[in-house]
Amino acid sequence: MDEFEQQFSDVVLFELPTFEDTQAFRARFRSRWGGWTHEDEEVWLFAAELTGSGELSQLLREAQELLSDREIPAIRFVLDGRVYLLESAEPVYERAAETRAA
Image (cartoon, rainbow, N blue to C red; front, side, top):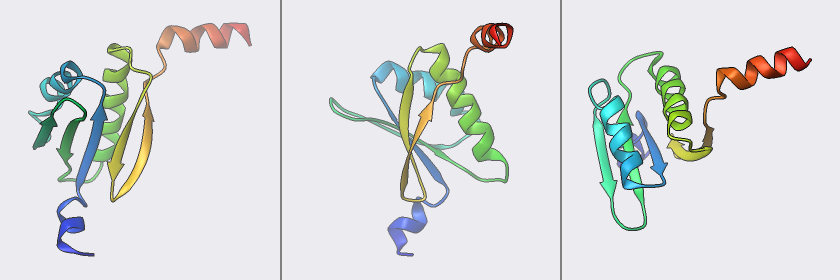
């Protein structure tokens, strides 16, 4: 593992559709996860640094909830050099409707 990869081994990098989404992520997560943001006309990035066990699952769950709140169906994120798709959380009322229909 080279030095560049090592710097990003404990960082989750989210690619967001707008500047406003970057601001929403910053407001929701920055007090608990350090990191940085990069904003320009083409790319809106939000990085969160992981420091302890269990943080990744908590961060991703909360990110899904925020995506749902902002009505964003899915975003890409990078972890350990791999790109993943994070879909928004399914609203509770949709799950309840599916359960009743079954």
